[in-house]
Length: 273
Length: 209
Image 1 (cartoon, each protein chain N blue to C red):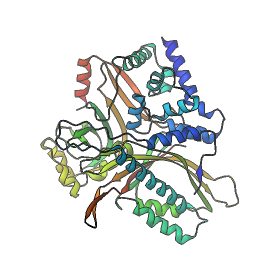
Image 2: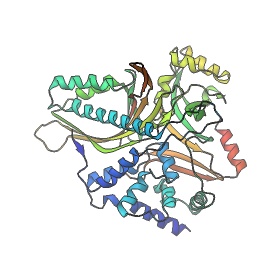
Image 3: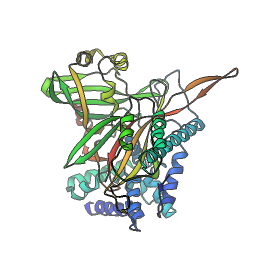
């Protein structure tokens, strides 16, 4: 089994670099950019082996045929392949099972941007009463009436300050594409006394937190780290990190795949908040 | 404008580009809402073309602002025209790069960013873009505007000696650009017509090399 998955990794690396055969620097650069997963949108397209995934398009164009076992290869390409090459037998078995189960003919698993149970975890530095702390904001993408959607703050945590705010009410609605630019708008939107902030800070559970902002006691610095957690796939939890490197296997990739029971998964999801 | 792609990959990339042009309709799930709004595929395609056109103009202006061989007044005018592409003067360009394993981040208001680009101290600055623009799905926000993110790929070469063929500094950056389409109803004669102008928002710049 291990040999099989390593063979697939190898063939995938060859496939991903098929456009650099000519050894032209620009070609490799363009190929790396094209196949790099730059947003969660692109991650979902690759996961679903959607017809607009550049990986699929480029292969079919170059070879004039569909990629054999294309979806399995697309799913594997979502993992950090450098880690896969070093992974132990247990992890590789998990990956193999995950790909097989996600790709079952009758019960194939697909993702949608509008799914519930997936989150962005933002780590950022804050200043509170003049001192620096590290804070975590858990963001969820929420669908509303009329085909509208928005990113909302689900939880705010800061261990050093004893903050553990959780809300189920959508508040501080960031545009639906905010993850595409790594939530730059988070710290620009949440500014004391800005009209947008005052209009949107609707959540009793988070009122204390919003009051700190409104009174100027709390300000935000840059987001230091973003991770995505996907809980919607039966039997698994996926953790995504961004890998910045000059390879086609780069961008938002699966850094950890956990095989879990539904009870374990439920507990893990609860621990997010 | 100088675009790169004199290599064996263009066919595949052209397909990528065309695939993005043949956009699917909005894929939103609704929880039994009564004010369901269905965006036609034609309108989505129109949005997409409009967004890509605006992104191309941004690329064009960036190359112009940086190019010291272009008349100074034209480069200054290009900054003003670039600012008009954005939704607001408050939009920012966030630049991040990794040094010694640490991510460094800085925000610049859009005008400051383009003023700095104009003022780079060098004999020659050459900025080119690869024709590999990618666009996420376009989604409707709570304010009834439509949002997407465009990704462009930029190559910057800086020369301190105008005679030199070898750049003293070179980097390749991916720019993720927020794109906002705000429906605007105007009256033409006795008819109300909805226009969908695309504007740019915040930009996230990541150095890749």
